[in-house]
Structures are given as C-alpha cells and as structure tokens.
Length: 123
Image (cartoon, rainbow, N blue to C red; front, side, top):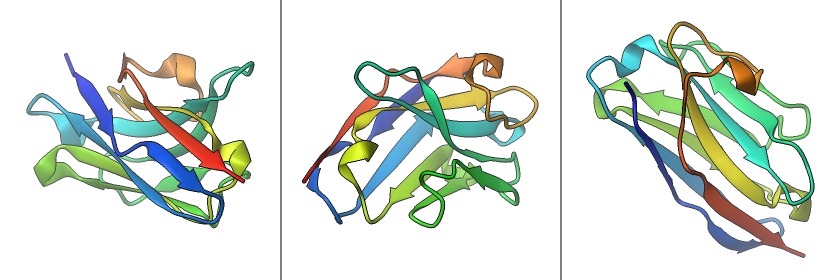
C-alpha cells in the first residue's frame, strides 16, 4: 500500500516555473516506478513524465519535453516535477502515480494515485 500526496501547485504567469512534489508513504518507495499525469478541463487524463525505480530512466510527453524535468529522491520517498517555461495549455490538475514494478506512460497501468494538485498558468 502506497499513499501519495502532491504539493507545489499554484497560479503562475506564462513563462514562469513551478516545482511539484509527491511524497510517498511506505518503506519500499524505491521499488516503484513513478509518473506524473495531468487532466485539463474537458480533457482526458494524459501522460506527462515517468521515472524508473532507480531514477536512471525518464520519459516525457512531447508537449513538455525540454521544459519539464522529473526526478526522485528515494531517501526522501519523494518524486518531483520541475516545470519551466510554463504555458497556459499546461493548466491542469497534476497527479502523481506509482507502479509496483515499472514506469509506464499508460495511466491505467498504475496502482496508486495521489489526489492531485492544481496548476494554473495565466497568459
């Protein structure tokens, strides 16, 4: 059982930056692949970024590549999403997710989800 709590969302102007954090419970955090997903109003939840259990492998959606960086600190049971050069289209609720075996771009494959944190980017 893993419980995830996101934080760091807020309101920012276009071109600004935010850093999201996802704190995980449990003693086996390093065994989980982690991902960030987001859901904008009127749209389906979409993949943003993933990171492998060791943190050595990452992947990004084309829409955020070069602007967002996912990282993790297994000693702190925390995964991060650094978001730079934010655009209004980045506005969404951002969710942290954990997979028991690997990281995936497919949300339905994840086992645990946080409750989300709102990111709003104004133009």
